[in-house]
Structures are given as structure tokens and as C-alpha cells.
Length: 413
Image 1 (tube, rainbow, N blue to C red):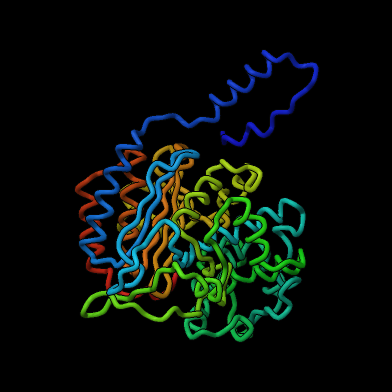
Image 2 (spheres, rainbow, N blue to C red):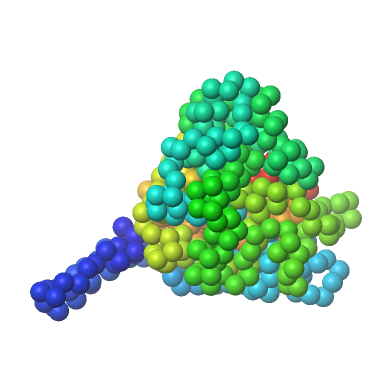
């Protein structure tokens, strides 16, 4: 039961004060997750592990936050914004969130859908008439829900290569007329960036308000996410921004901030600081019900499609009993708990956010380098708090990640 259930209490003038107080106490006891984790000790252990791993991989800079319920247990930073420069990463340093942006787009879309601005079963072509597959009838089967759950049926990462060549969506959309889904929409999983970003057209078509404006007024401002923004221009306008870094033979090298995935803003165009991510975790775990209601959160975290192949991932395979995707969120089952998770990787940045649905404990990590060490850090924390941890296994996965950290992703996530 989520803490936001308290918002369902309605005062009635005939009710006695004692009855009201008793009801509140009962609801509070039901809402609070069972405390079986010494989170403060775990946070200290994670901080040591975080710094050890960042130093061992010579990561230029990063930050993390650990949230327990509506309390920030730990939030700290590491290193510099640009390798070779003195400017240190602080709590307000802005990073690209890459595909963690999808959690924002899905949240915004779900809020609007619950306000009846559009429906999950609306046809995408009603909002994006230029979208067409090789078999035109298949285009009319694609629904809004399929965009946010990666269940369009298309081959994964369709036309991401055009995004990486800095092509705008208007130049990419006509390409879909050359292909067909490999299964009917809604029947199989295939991760997308271009199609996911069409939710921007849906939002504007349904409300007359841009995606960026909706995020600012409905999410950033009420949650006091003071450094959060959408787009390349906003990122470059910040004086306190982290620079992207890629691995070379001589170590991490700062590179130009590319526009590429910013053209797909709902998929990878949100920017934020670690202090912003603390607020985002609280909201996702139900502690800002006026922004994200319990019904919205439940809808987003209801599985739409199975992603069983993720159970074979080297870090998670010993722990997951099920894997799926909701709306903008990965859903991993560990024991009797679910981990609500998403990672991001694009153009010199990595990001990750995850929380335990049962324990209401979450973590977010941001880095200005394309290192897979972030996956080990996130998994280490999650597996630790769920009580499934095995130190030897985690060390082994960390060692394995060092061999892969220098390789660029073939598809941004």
C-alpha cells in the first residue's frame, strides 16, 4: 500500500475526532514499509564502494543520492565537471539523463491520460499522420501505449543510427515506410528511441502545450527540481554543467556535447542534477501525490510486456525471477519485491535510477563518462538492500565490467 493512501481520507463533520485520529494512525501503519534494512549503514558502505569504483576506473566526475521514503539518507559527489579543469561536481551540477528521460516522459503522459486528455488505445497515426509502415494497415494498429512500453513490435533501436547522425525526427519518420513490425503491436518487446519520442506529438496534439512546457509546469516546478530542463539549448545555458567524456587509449577525454539524442527529447533529452533526482525518487515512490498520484504510479509500473532476456544480464541473472517493462520503467522481480529501474547511456554520460517498491528505498547515480561501472554500482546497492547480496559475486561483476567499460554502446539505453 502506498503512503499516498492518506490523501483518500475525507473529513466528515459527524465523525468523532478520536475516530479520525485512530483512522489516520491505522493508515499510517499500513502505509509504512516494513523496516528490515539498516539503510544508514548500507549508505555508508555504498559511499565507500562508490568512491572505490570511481577511482579505480578514473571516472572524471559523478554524483549519487540514496532516498529512504521521503528522507534523503545520503547525497554526495565525486570529481570534476571536466577532466583537467578545477571545477568540481556539486549537488547542482547538471548531467544529461539519457534514457532516464523516459521516466519523465512516461510520467507526464500518464498524468495526462488519467486526465482524459487522450487514451492509451488512441491510434498513434491520429497524432502523427506521417507515420507509416511498409504494410499500411499495421500503422493503424499502433497505439499510444505501445510507444511508452516499447511494444510496437519493431526491431530494437530502429533508426537510432540516424539520431546519432544528428538527423531530426522529421527526416527519420519517412524511413519507417520501408519496414514492418516483426510481431503485432503489443505482443513483443523491442526497445525504441525514435518511436518512443512520438509521445511528444501526442502530448502537443492532445493539449496544445509542448512536452517541455508540460514537464516544467507540471513536474519540475512543483517538485522544486530547480536545475532540471529539456533540450540541448537548456543544457548548454547552464554554467554548472558536466562535460561528456569518452574512453581513449590515454584515458577519459572530454568531447563536444552532441545534439543527437536531444532530437528525441522524451527518450533522451532531459537534464538534471543529483539534487533534482532526489526529488524525482521521492515522487516516484509516492511521496508527492499531488504531482504523481497513486493511480498514475500504479499505471506506469503495471507490466505491459515481458523482457525475459534481461534476466540473462551478467549482473542480474542470479537474482531476478521475472523482468518486464511498464510505461517508461523496467520492472525487475527479486524475491517478494520489485525493483522499478531505468538506466541511460548517451554521448559521454551515464545515468541510473532505481527503487524498491516494497521497501521504498531508492538510488540515483549520474556520471559524466561512458562507463559500465554504473550498472555494477546500481545492482550492488539494489541487491544489498533486498538481502540477496553476495559480495563475491558483486566483485566478480565489477571485475567483468572493467573489461567492457571502454566499449561504446551500439544502442543508447
